Image (tube, rainbow, N blue to C red; front, side, top):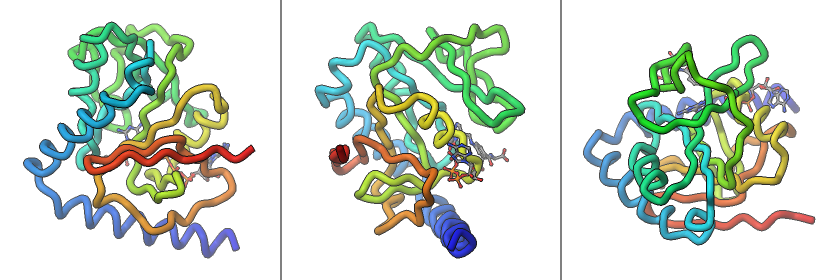
Length: 196
Ligand SMILES: Nc1nc2c(c(=O)[nH]1)N(C=O)[C@@H](CNc1ccc(C(=O)N[C@@H](CCC(=O)O)C(=O)O)cc1)CN2
Ligand SMILES: Nc1ncnc2c1ncn2[C@@H]1O[C@H](COP(=O)(O)OP(=O)(O)OP(=O)(O)O)[C@@H](O)[C@H]1O
């Protein structure tokens, strides 16, 4: 039943927001560092010529370390921005973190003079409130990433980044929810097999 699932999702979001607020800046900084090290060791990261990052909201793994790492490795780096009415994401290439500024949903976005670009990335790093071991993700409830991933298709590797305390035994997933290919936390890497 759609109604029951939506309610489960709301309950899971509440639980996760509570859990996130229990961890302080120091824990988050240390775990973000471990997570970045782990990700950067993966062949999928090392072989990538371009990556789509996200600008972290409070409580999410910090991706600034990954920005510097990617630039040092001569990768192209893209960031998403909210494209307004249709609740979709556009992408722009970013060369310095200083060119990011808070947008309408508060996360930092490429500056207003940005040029929207075709996403020439091999990896897309995806935030979320919660994830499960099957690669399902619980977002903030606006469907931005689900719509974006449905649009992009399966051509690029979807990497869910989260802290181990954001793991759920099972996300109350609905039909439109898109699956990740790879999960990385400060503790482990989980590869999800693609059916078919
Ligand atoms: N870092 C990050 N970027 C992302 C997402 C995300 O979850 N995290 N999104 C995932 O799809 C999309 C944006 N979705 C969002 C949906 C709601 C709010 C929101 O409620 N913002 C609050 C402040 C943040 C908070 O305290 O939760 C606000 O505007 O008051 C933000 C982003 C695209 N970019
Ligand atoms: N591919 C899609 N096309 C159209 N609408 C969609 C699509 N995916 C999700 N939606 C709609 O977006 C809304 C929010 O979906 P959901 O609760 O799964 O968001 P979420 O994944 O938690 O959010 P976000 O990706 O922003 O973090 C739902 O009403 C859903 O119907």
